[in-house]
Image (cartoon, rainbow, N blue to C red; front, top):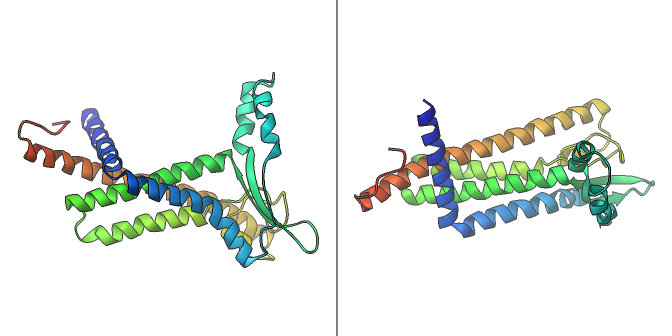
Length: 237
């Protein structure tokens, strides 16, 4: 059982690496587009639906980060604080004073954006390789739409930073939640929880899709190679 599981993992990894190596342009293009949209689309949506963005900045405290890392503060405390460190943010001032809306990106957000972007890039590279190998069948169009939908949800569903429709200090919300005004505290809390769950489901779904397509293309690629070169045998057999 363990040997079979390891063989399946190697087959999936082989399929993913082959797809990325054979189609680097598709992988890079899809990953870069997803990453850029993850940063640009939320403030753009808020600028159109609410008020135009009028302030963009990089956290000025970042220049002191090396000093902080070299300080005598315990590393456990540093590691607890660093994931929530805001790197840059967009915001719009309210005509009545204060913050109308804000979109902040911290270390945790960047890690999630990069990870999701790499998954999207791998998914489309695998989809292209699977299509070329002729193993997608009648589900080809649906499979591609599923990957595009996953990429879109991962971008639109990204959470904001601590600034929201109620000003700084409100719960973390999905970007679409900031479009609406006058939401109750109960609704805001529900949107916060929904955003966390939805983001996790999207990442798990994309990861599962990449693993499955990697497994399918890994096996098909090895079989094609063995037919082309009889002296070569698929790995794991």
